[in-house]
Amino acid sequence: MSAPFVKLTIENSVGYITFFHPDQNALPSESLVKLERTILDAGRNEAVKVIVIKSGGDRTFCAGASFKELVSISTTKEGEKFFSGFANVINAMRKCPKLIIGSVQGKAVGGGVGLASATDYCLASKFASIKLSELSIGIGPFVIEPAVSRKMGATAMSQMTINAETFFSPEFAKNNGLYAEVYDSVETLDEAVKSLAEKLSHYNSEALRELKTVFWKGTDHWDTLLKERAKISGKLVLSDFTKDSLKRFQ
Image 1 (cartoon, rainbow, N blue to C red):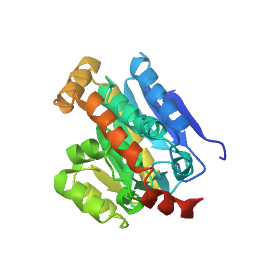
Image 2 (tube, rainbow, N blue to C red):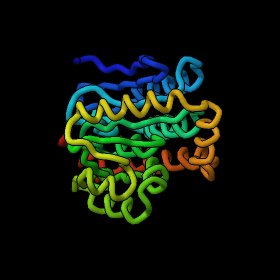
Image 3 (cartoon, helix red, strand yellow):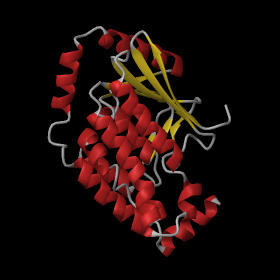
Image 4 (cartoon, one colour):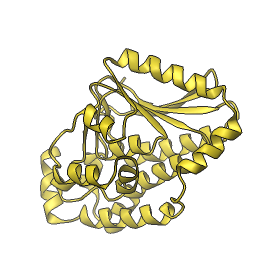
């Protein structure tokens, strides 16, 4: 694999949404837009009963924001638009009428942690450590914070945010509610995700839809909230501190 992609494949009533980028599965604007649209399409597709979100490759689930694109941002409007891409993906997952299972086979950083947090149920491999690195480059996990705090709690969220250069173990993620289970290999993870998704696909679709509504109760304001957070990040990405920090990734 070399070219970025976002694709939906349907197998036994399960919609597998897979994203890939050669830069450690980072998410530039184009990929974020495609991911949002694919989630919305799967939510409307009657052939899909349950959704699985996963990424290509073995050891990195998602490196978060594309640093190469962050470097190129020159106005607050551009910054807001970029970070709104993450807001739109999280809100698409939140409002999708179907349960979304996350399959995290490798490391998740920044927006990748946000993506995992926005799933309804998340399984991972023993390679799936997590890190919120935003503060170390002068920004902060503002857009994804509501999703991460909702899933893991304010204490774990603040601990990861402040220790921005530290990878936290899959066991930490499991103990704090992000992962339901951690598997010893990617192969056993794939088997567990497939088994669970296909089992759920045979349940009452109406019951699953109502259950999802219950899961996300109290988040109706996120459309506005996450856009406001995108403005904060869009402004901070133009700071001298952040520009200097990002130079090492050019």
